[in-house]
Amino acid sequence: MFVLNTDRTFECAINVVIPTDGKPKREQFRAKFKIISHDKLKECAAINPSGSILDLVLVDVMDIEVQGVEDKTDIMNAVINDPCCAAALQKAYNDAIVKNNR
Image (tube, rainbow, N blue to C red; front, side):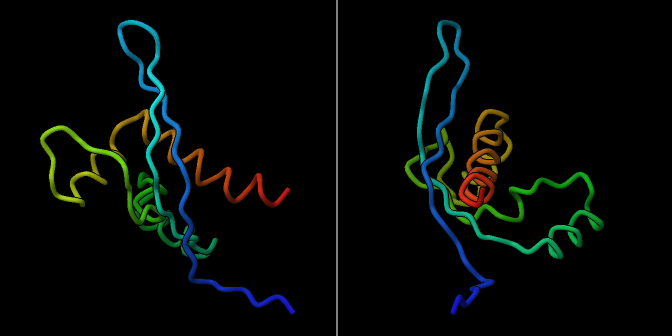
């Protein structure tokens, strides 16, 4: 019998492309996400419609440094606020859920 764990996390590699003056630079880091229910997503969207899903699901980032930033929370905030990293994180989260369940 399948037993559903409703409090789970997963880690995955995040592939991000950073635009530069020359050609785009490909980088990689790791992230840990938590799975949240549809009800929780709807509840959070009702409270803060302009909020990012990353604020809810991102648990940790690894193998990445942010210049001049040491605090782990500040590093995560910088990663979430960078458009390239945010897009790559959202893609990885969605792909892990959607692509694996097609």
